[in-house]
Image (cartoon, rainbow, N blue to C red; front, side, top):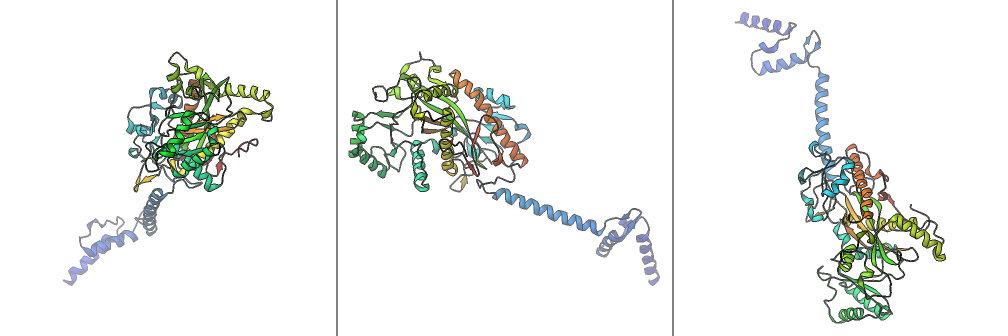
Length: 493
């Protein structure tokens, strides 16, 4: 037996010291397995060690590092804070190859997508960009992380007149900032405002003109203009004094009314009242970046006399209101004018009026006041209306990782060339029923998609979106650490 054991040991020794190092012949068993590992690590072949200790150490270390890196990146992406100055998400979900360049929108909108290399699609789930006139046309909570829609979860609050003026006035009170572009406004559904208006009436307000508005309506509807000591103004005051429910209440949006002092001394355009419809683009919610663009003049079809309230239409500029009053015989081109037309008109006006002759560049003076006002508005509503990460009852309202918002802003100009805001609008119409609006949108809309493509490129490359500048005719008015301001003659800052 001893001889047999000795022979076996010699055979095993020869087997594991031959140059082939063939361990496959080792009989199965726990000892053999451990011996196989030992030989595999230490034995040599013609080309050197089969598996060196250093190589095993490197592989194990790299695997641990890779696991930790993936876990860390996942955690940071899930917990990356939104809307923090100078910050943006560390990682954005890439757009699937089949969806790149696809956009959901109307046939009319598709005309402006094409120059930017975008293709119209009717498949909502496959579109990289989605554009619906109203926010309810797009179910934001069903969006994929990589999709981008033209509405943000709570942007509608901005275009609700009561909430708009309420929020702006609260900001003015808390910040001490003068918002002199907002007309004198009272919320009749608010007890404090209601009483303040009644006090104002007893202090000479009955001798002034007022505008009663239903905040829930657009297109010139729900607006009543009341002249000094008019029957309508007296009736409104009496209703407020004797009918507690008149004007609505704070618990419900139904029946709410606001009242504003009519801005006197407005500048007419060739004898007709007008206002300016301009545009605002929230190009990115995370981080927050906003641009401005000129729009058009909306001009009343009736001659304007601020002391004559016999015709409401003479005081309204909305085209739908004009059409309802004048019939279809009037051409929409008569109710629109361009900023170029306004620039010429203001140059002539300034040259003939010594009171404003100190304004050297009147169209820039007007435009910069508007940009200042819009920059203030988006600053105030930034977290309330423009956060893509907004939640309700612990649930995100939007499935996308970023989004954009196309807004309209309406402004009037008085005879001192001071601007006044009348309202903001979520999802303004893309009217193309006049040559002026067609020409304007032919610049505005392709510019939007150019901006959005740059935002997307920065998301994918990791470049800071907050470092974007004005890429085309859209002008930057707000981003982290920058807010356009205008002091009346010193330009933006």
